[in-house]
Length: 133
Image (cartoon, rainbow, N blue to C red; front, side):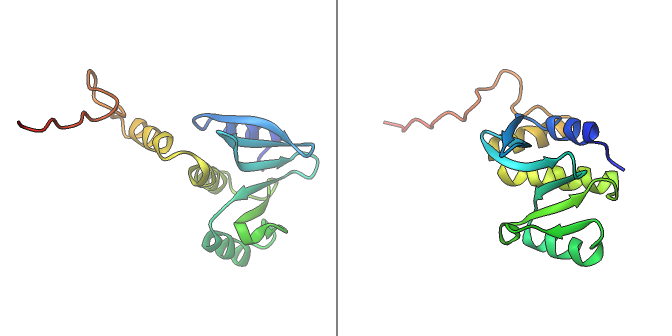
């Protein structure tokens, strides 16, 4: 079982994740784009999954995952009291990756592998080549 506090901590642990109200429910966003909402009283969450993930999960575990009215966009309901923690963490990261800017995802991935996003002392962007005259 995942508690409401655990879900919130997991969502906010992702780079640049912020919590904002969304029609009376907490939502988790990256630069204004929602990757998850939290239905506290219902002990559930809604994540932005790929349609393939959604289909597989709903078929395999219908007591844990269900399609929302916005399911055609990948929005999938998750029963927090029934979902495996490791699976939820993986799906939450995937939902975050779907809406996060590519640069933020790349920086996270680089940090995860132990390498800095850019080598120390190098410019943040590659320099333009100068034409030989």
